[in-house]
Amino acid sequence: MADPFFEVRELTVRFDGVTALDRVSLSVSSGEIRGLIGPNGAGKTTLFRTIAGLVRPKTGSIFFGGRSILGLSPHHIVGRGVARTFQANQPFPGLTVREHLRVGADGWGRGAVGALFLRPDRTEEARLRKEADQLLEFLGLDPVADQLASELPYGLQRLTELGRALATRPRLLLLDEPAAGLRPEERRALAERLRALQGRGLTLLLVEHQMPLVMNLCRRITVLHGGRFLAEGSPEVIQQHPEVRLAYLGREAQ
Image (cartoon, rainbow, N blue to C red; front, side):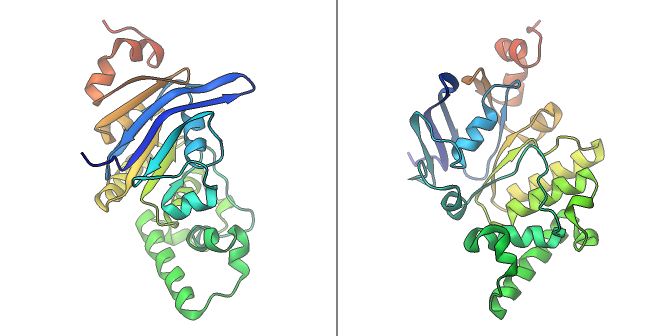
């Protein structure tokens, strides 16, 4: 049997004696949109931070494309093809939407924001411009491409955050509450774009509190609670799981 596209094995993370993740395992197939849910404090963001190389686990392993990425720097993990978005918008002050995508496309290879002020050769410049234009069109951001990202409405800032991650050309995208604060029509548009990304071969791991979005997008959902694996299955199985309904949805199954 082939190795999973992405796999976390027996991951344990402790902070000052507090166990944030307790032997968590997770396996994701290539091209999948996997949901990752759980109440606040379940360990979802800690898991993302550990995958991204920002937290060193006490025990466990992380494999991507059949190779270990545990212990690599965040820079090298992005270089391997793993990108993430964040819970809160984090626009760089003074940069336009287009420049944010440029940071994603070029910054990881040259040093983040400083990349914008280097002078790549004409071939590289043309490539960056083309990739940025394609992403701007895909995300519907072309009308605001040259506006400061920090001055845009919240929903457009969320799309800029997504665009910055996509500009790194990931194969695995970790989405940390991408629909937070979005209006219903914006959530529907987000769902369409995530499906389109899946159609292009991208694998997505989605943390989200908007349950209709998760249930609609994901064929398989993993549930964490108190830093531990609680359940996994189809949306129908998760919705009827008595421990999930008690721990996350706040009510027992009838």
